Length: 293
Image (cartoon, rainbow, N blue to C red):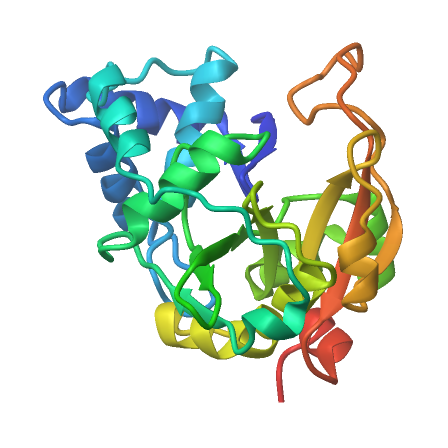
């Protein structure tokens, strides 16, 4: 019987992997993006909204390469130190902001898609000031740059694809593996949340989380043609207390186990994170577990 492995939500047999190898060998001029695009077309790999899953295919190819199953063409993109330094130099000058929240209202929470004029500013802030850094979006994502009533930049918020599997979240929702595979696209992850380091305003973070949560479902529907019903985030316990998420009514449902998903031998330890969830609208659990009405 052909062995089957599950990668990126798909069951792959040796014949599938051999087909990928053949696709790579038959098209040596194709770059990685072209390969992922052609693979989604060949498999008719689509999301719940009917969109081709190009970025999921890219992730699958990278995972297969890390496991030694395939060899991808060399990356075309390279890091340009001059470009990075130019980006940082172009960021607006920072003046301290330390005043009551009322003095900043109303905030402007603006979407910054990839080609928006503010996108380099958004990316620069995260690259320079977020402890995880930032290399750019992967798959479906929404980026928000937050400014106060005077037009001063105060925060960056990034939502993207949900984590593939996390026990506390899946148990809280009531997901089994098959249901998670079918419904995962209806969950969005708060990948980055940055209050700019020169901004010291009590209650600002929880206020921003509330503002973004109220509009994200509509923004996601507009951008990607399908809704999201639940938000998630992971908070490193040794770094943060999750205070702003609790103040914004997010629920801590448990902790990660402190292991990397790439650590097959269970020897590599990674920071333990609290798992926070925020339902957007009822009946969210029914929508995540069953076919929508």
